[in-house]
Length: 245
Ligand SMILES: *Cc1c(COP(=O)(O)O)cnc(C)c1O
Image (cartoon, rainbow, N blue to C red; front, top):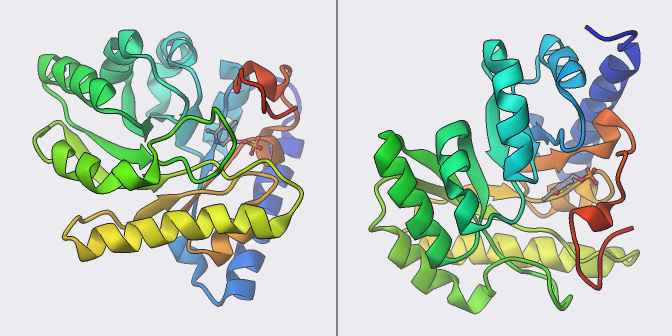
């Protein structure tokens, strides 16, 4: 283990405490809210330290990072979760190495993943990423296309659709942020009413998770609050006009 990682244990414990507090505030059972540590930009040494603290699933935003880290951590039994925009030409790596994709947002990608997964003889869990904010170029399926998309996904046996994922608007106004999370919950509830078994809601990050808990998140994607500030600005991950700084 690299150096002193007490700070990581402290952050991890503190995040869990803050999530539990948000659950109490919302009248929810903390057992119903999982934390997905987001390890993007951090190296294998730190992830190994996180594994010794009990973390086993890690969210990554880029297929290349999963490809680079997975072989170095093959002994750790990690489940890699793809949470970032995925180009179809990277579907092969993800089909080989990831246990789950939360950023499924178009049929072309479903087709590419399915083809690669058939080849690998595997099936994976997927969440459909929905665009719930009005920001111009954030990735995700337009909400009005969700019913048709979920119906179309029924024909891919390698993709087990488990729920929905979103990124809220980047705003200091909690009302606007919370409206994104509420939108995702309502879309999930409508889809369930239409016969889709998709209970999971992946929403909420370091800066906005209490609002996501209040709106029914079953899973929070937390990077900074666990691992600290990233060496790159988030504009590296959201290369678009409204990029988070
Ligand atoms: C980086 C990232 C997160 C975590 O963000 P933090 O603010 O560091 O908690 C969550 N979701 C996605 C898609 C990300 O790329």
